[in-house]
Every structure is written in structure tokens, then in C-alpha cells.
Length: 92
Image (cartoon, rainbow, N blue to C red):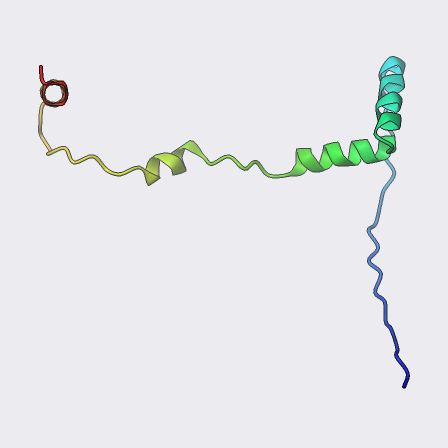
């Protein structure tokens, strides 16, 4: 009996990027890359991936729309309604 194994390789296209940075910064980055056992290219790639990710925060308008609508009768004096609610709440 023969077993045939098929492999699929995914190749990600990479492009070169030239950066001009301060020499002291480059020395610092090389030390960081060496401590992390990685390359400067990998550090830059990870940084750019984080930068390109969409924010996970919700829009304030979406959050407001999710709030429960208050049950305030139309045409009421809001100032008087507020003070009445506060008196009832705190037994003043």
C-alpha cells in the first residue's frame, strides 16, 4: 500500500523597505533585537502589524445608542423633575 503525501506551501510576498533613522537609535534597536533573539525587520514588522490593526474601541455614538431610553414624559419641566427625583431618592 502506498501513501502519497501532498504539501501546500504558502508564500507571503515581502517587500524591501529602506529607513533612515538616527545612528544612536539604530544601536539601541540592535541591542533590543539581540536581547529578544529576533531581527530588526521582525521588530518593525510586528510594530507595523499592531499599527495597522483596527481599533477595538467602540464609537461613543454606538455606546450611547445602546443605552436605555429614559422614561420622561414630554413637556415636563426637567429641572423640577430632577429635584423631585432627588428628593425621592434621598428622602429629603
